[in-house]
Amino acid sequence: MRTYSRLAVSVALAAALGSAAAARELTKEEKAAISKAIQEQLKDPESIRITWEPLHSDETYCGTVNARNSFGGYVGDAPFIVTLKRIKGRMAPIGLDIGDPRDSVRNNKAIMDACLSEGYSLVLSGTLPSALAQRQKQSRMRAWDGTPSSPSNLTPEQEIEASYDRLQHRLDRSEGVCKTKTGDYVAMAQSACAAQGGRVLGN
Image (cartoon, rainbow, N blue to C red; front, side, top):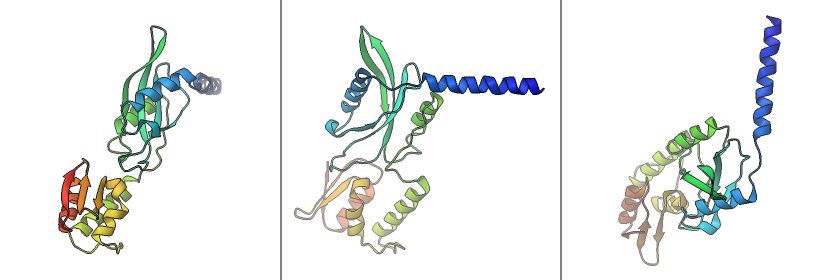
């Protein structure tokens, strides 16, 4: 029994060391190919910030990317997964899938699970834990409905200004226009805008 236990430990240790040895840094060619593929999917391609992970798989690569939104602010890390293939001597990223930086649990579970199965443990920055995000969302909804929003003492207008980057909308006082984008909070943003006498325009 003792011999068997030692053998099992040795096998497990060898497997772990083999896995660690297999991981390697991406080449410049691989990074350039992935960067180009990501840039083609984002609104501000020049603003991308990629966190490069070691390559843990023969073909599957995972990492995180942050980029500016329409308002010029960085929105937080989004996970991505891509397959690396060499076609006719050139590195070709295939099937790139980029997650959503606004919700690391709900929208990114499939990507995170797929990456984990390939040996990647991604850490997303700039995102709120789901429970905290839900509490903040409920607080904003109470403020926009005109009911007390404890513990926040902000007015609905201040709530809008303080969180416009996350809610993806903007109030332009000089023109009295609320510009909104598609997203989870569009209906609430439009209601708040109309309550202040603003004209709602799509963006």
